[in-house]
Length: 152
Image: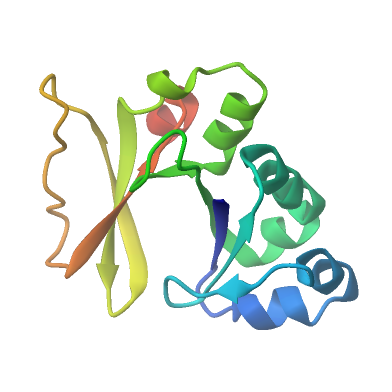
């Protein structure tokens, strides 16, 4: 299963905004919903392609209410997420799954909420630097495209 997660913008209840709108509610109605982070909505889809398609179907809402759309594809990584752009690039065959891990955004998790990302490159030994923007209880690693890394 491929999980897609939408993290709401500050001062926006992402679950309310997505589920109160008929088109978005219908697109999400066939999925069991989760909230892995504060102010998030996640669903499991059958494939990376289905996850990217769902993001595309919900794009109007994502632009308005979502700060971050991320995808966890087990065939790429069991514990790291992909940005929406990187997930689309992998699905389209523009990026090979094994070429996705060098550039990442590490988000801190504070009181269940994702906080500002730290953009880093993976060390030659495959490890990542520790998140040091503030004290946090845990971190979430999101693999990003080269363009997202440069803009970060």
